[in-house]
Image (cartoon, rainbow, N blue to C red; front, side, top):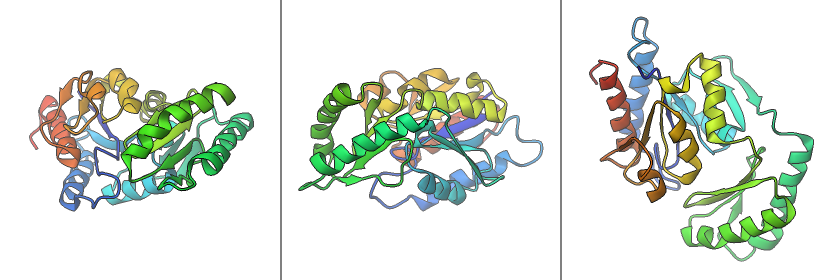
Length: 252
């Protein structure tokens, strides 16, 4: 049985800098509401989020979907409980790690951002990141960032999407985040499903009972997951959720 369905945001619920599929949001919100109905919890998976986005963004999406299960932001850097309205930060974030992240942010600001479309992701605490609407800037920046990290803060790790580069402490990964979420929710990872679209999702996808990628996912992800959906972004995520319903013996 799949008891908890976890989704990334970018690439799965929406695309950066593009309008939301509000009809799709309404459908997923209905599924999340049905999961909290007495008597349905064993067969209707609850819905949660595991995203690299910062706290405020993940909280707003959580509210839009009416979620009642804890969600993960900054790739497991923090956990937000929407019922208790409480945020918990990952204990990996020590003062020493925060100082290293600040060094990376300073490098981004002084050496990378000038004369580009890049912007510092000011909202993040457990990561140092930049965002841009131009994927070519990300392709150019990622190897530069990997070199800088290797030479100056080698205990940190570099991840990228089409629109962002993030430098992250060891121990703050989406897989570790899902383990944290499973502990909070009282589940085994085998009872969870996850849908993600980039290499930052891969370890988490390989750890759960059912893994999905929307059709728009990166090739490295498409090759490794249990199921690739026919639909992209929100359509793919709804398709994955319906697969879980059917696996549990429920109709959509």
